[in-house]
Length: 72
Image (spheres, rainbow, N blue to C red):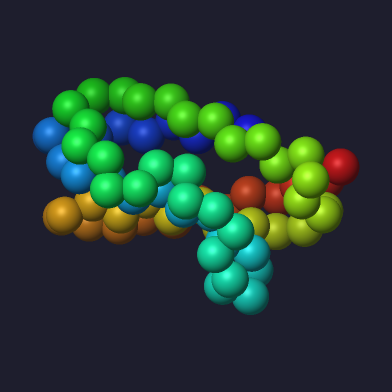
C-alpha cells in the first residue's frame, strides 16, 4: 500500500494505520519532521486480513483520515 501526503508547510507528522474497531495496527511514521510538499510512504499489508482500515495523518496543526479497503 502506498500513501501520498501533501503538507502545506514543514510539520512533525505521525501516520498510523487502524482497523475498523479503532485498534492501532501500525505506526507508519512516528513524530517525524517533514518539509512542505508531497511525500510518499509505503506499508506492507500482506499479512493483514481482508477488511476496512483507516489511515490517519496527524500534524501539529491538523489531522485527516482516509479509508482503505483491502480486498485480497
